[in-house]
Image (cartoon, rainbow over all chains, first blue to last red; front, side):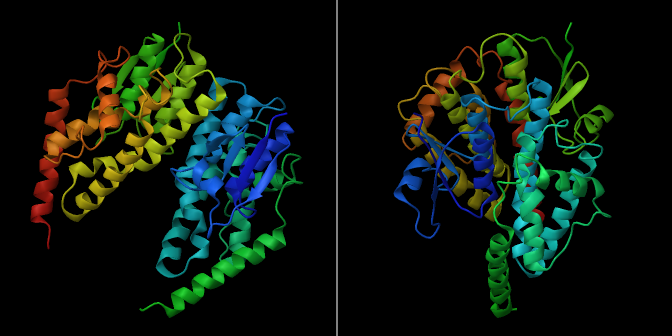
Length: 224
Length: 224
């Protein structure tokens, strides 16, 4: 029997991307929670280049980088497809997954910062949400009507972003400003592939609220 | 007959990635040189999000991002495979392509800068080359003995880096410091998939030397 292990973090959207893909495929796996303050020898040895989660270990062979893992899962296991079938649709899905990782992921945790850094980051997130809102016009999901690769990549804006907003008290997304994005987000959170796989919101909120408060305390005590 | 157009720049490694992939597959294409100071309406309309080359247009449908285009080419056209067949090998190829784009591409043009920015960038490139040198130990190419996806992604370190070094007078790569990387680079430049597709070195050198000199002049006249 195939042995699948996932080194991850319960609060990480990147870790959840892999979990969701495994669940869509119906693959049984062992989840191993990492401690970033004290990384396990297995993590360091499985991802020596980045020393980061998530890492999927399949029959003893490790793979790092969440979207690389998703491609591997889609190519290796039977079950519903994660990428669309048509090559052009696949390209569009990969384009948006890359956009989300390159342009949005880097600025979205700006909510957990303070001061000038937060102000600048908020503006960037706002610009990126405008791009996403424009793309999602008249669309149920990123590629056609099927939840898939790009939507999984977007989990941190579909679910985590709202938690970041609430934790920090900074609200960017309203259905007036981003109607298409908001509509997509509602569909997303309630779709069958996601709704039973989301982490508990109150736990996530408590975790990120503590982070936000720690950032505020650090900022207040920093020399001006 | 399939109509394939490529919007690119003659000196861009990202543009050449796509050209090399099309040549490996034996696909005829029309190359359209862009002017970055005066971008064509076709570019702006084909890649509205990034407004960057390369863009592949196949039967009127545009695709942006060089490595997304490579996946599309590999899935769409007959001919030798660009990605390996085995899913695990494909994951390894994608991992290194991502590493090169995320960690190396961002710092490699540091050679064309001056002062503190160049010093910091040089150190980062040095660290990244150590990672690549370690990975390429006892390997002909990134995945097994076959030239492919990750090697194409690495074209800017295999060929352009040497041009940047010569143009700026800053030399980082020697066969003593990076023996495995140097050996890979020699194999690379002479392999059948690449050797007739490289841009003319003296033209590239003149182009980047002018850029390097412009950076030096700007740095010399900047307030200290």
